[in-house]
Length: 497
Image (cartoon, rainbow, N blue to C red; front, side, top):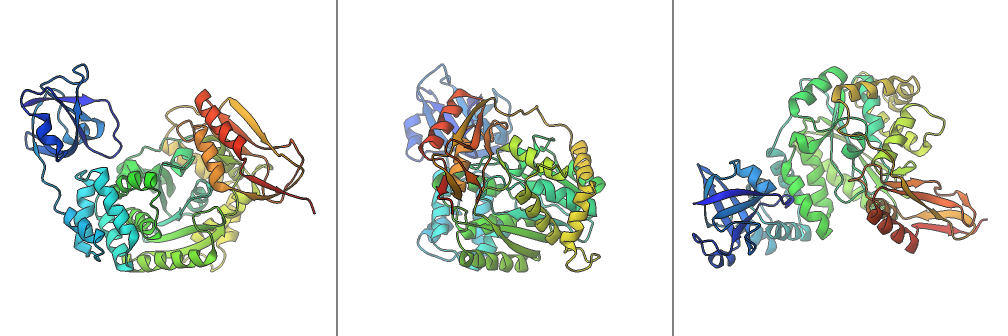
């Protein structure tokens, strides 16, 4: 038996084990051909990808190292005796091979794959093979099967009230932090909106990252129920609630590969809403030249897929198309986006109008789900709740219920203004490029990093006038962000009429 050792390496959704080449009990070379091993002890077992270590300062000859995720999953203390064997590949890999060959998979096949993915029985290479095979072709029935399979693993929330509402934006537009305004408005009206949100993976901020500037978001299921019972709403991190955990594993491989098909996106979103116990869902699809969805025809196709899946799983859905031609609000990055959302709720004179009006539109569409509200009054009711201060008071109560954030977040002190190179009018803004600049500046890891926008579409500018300001806290991040912005600002300036 080998002695178990925890290795402080984050392998991000992949089980990884480490064996010394000089191990006297197992010949490392015998395992390299397959690379996947089974680690077992005391009735517990996991599959892990094997790495060989030559430095005895890292791993002793009689030790087996497990990276952070695999160590937690095995659930044994350091020093515990473990043994390793050649791992048999998951049986569900036969389904993946069939999909690679062009087969249409059944509901049970997708259920097998997702169970093994969730149990970390797949390496990232095997997950990539599944994702790329699925990206090449999926029928609508397969999307439904994948949705149901993903919703079936992990936590499945149930609520006593008949109507449980939710919203989701498909993303791609920086600064689009409407949930932090919509949730307080809807909760102030009295509809239950238990909002579980993601942390950013490749974007400068997710709703959970931004809410964490104001309150704690790592909240478990029981506490979440208490908060919603008292306040009708919450804004928490979905990963802590363990909704559709397979989705987080798949996303960790999708994003580096830039695999983001409409089918997989719909299955991802709908599985989480189904697992969250939602009965009524609003989906926001921004449409614009640098958004995820570039034209209305593509948006209509996506809407129909959402509507089909929703109908099959019993969700009432409303899909709305919004303007995706430029960033929403003035801030990109958690602190800046939280600032914008709070200013809207405070009815501040300098609150960004586009963020306010978009949030009111979405909140109104959700309030129209309420059978007790006269049809078509949703936006009017949302505006009343915002103007009266009821939505702001509800946000304050939700913040108090969730508790203070883990640490204070302040705006990054290292700044540089990116200026217009000519006189003219802002004709276009590249959402993707500005999001990358904010990300390189350190967002969302550093919540105070990001981009503060001064100019939007149609605004006149003079040569040398600031278009936006980069905020960063670390010199390397500051250099990366300013270098990218310096090579191309992301703004196109046209001649004045």
